[in-house]
Length: 455
Image (cartoon, rainbow, N blue to C red; front, side, top):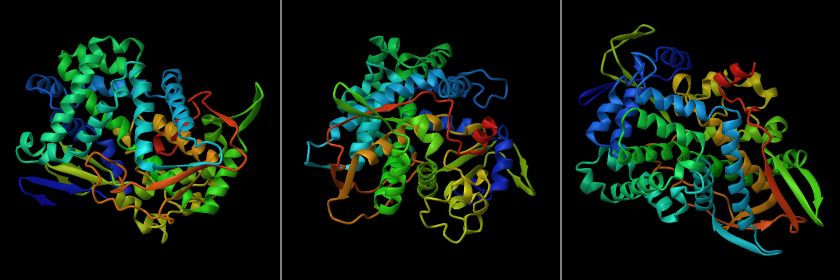
């Protein structure tokens, strides 16, 4: 495919995708990410130059680009450090669910996507940035989403200082909040992820102002896809009553019930969900397959053969996940349907190999935050559905259109919110709830790389 001033190759078969992933030096992602980060975050020329030093790691694992990748992978790997983040995140989710609960025999009306976005924004960023989290200020959180909504105009708009004035102003507002956060000692009680990202930038000579701007890029990775994943999962569950009933029964079997100070306390453990709730996990994974639209992009660093095709230096290569996820030859004639049982173990013979599931990318650029995001989504979805009944205010569930999904999104974003009515399920009005996580070493292995680690 030839575009004005740019040649583009599109790869749509799992076999060639795997070949691309093995050639990660010649078919490279870091140079593209560096350009994206520089433009989106608005860093200065000096920092852009620092980021471009050994950007692809051709001279070894050093430099800002390589150090930043290492920081993310190390901090977000399952283990005690990730558990620290998980527990803060879970505490915030539990608090938000408690605040959502209507009074006994009453109902509450909310816009479900907005509620999920606000809950996930606070839970995620508090777990990363600690008590002085800049997003504690809702005006800063709202500014981030204003910025995220205008990413395309920043990236491709003519004279973005004019055509993208609002998202750029919002970006500057968030960046200033992060600069104030660092100056106030916010890192002191922050996560290992925040510490390692800060260290990667300062060790490579990035000034504080641009370091703060880079956290907008980090926020995109942390926040943009988790909300739609939780939204679509809840929507599919509640719009399929028989499925909702089956998943609730599955979760209820692993809930611990205790009496404390004359109160009934029910505890949902995320580790138990991952071990004992296959239909919940299959529904979540099918949601990611059904709603994904991300495209992995690579730059051809030198003339390279991909099978029998010669890829020319300087060209771009795309691997759109949606084409693979919607390929009937791979997934069967029901490929366009939401099939919540598609990923159950007993259905393994009826679906393609794990490499055909591309919701988190793959290879060297496999999403490092997939375990944290999965824990967060399971915590919200599982606890929400066992606590609450939910009905759309208009009386019927309808899937919103997704035409305006943002350029940074891997999952479809709804064009419109859904107003819903929430009520406490029968018999649960006087119950207190807790969410627990005993350890993140128990992972939900959805991708080939994770399955290899667990064997």
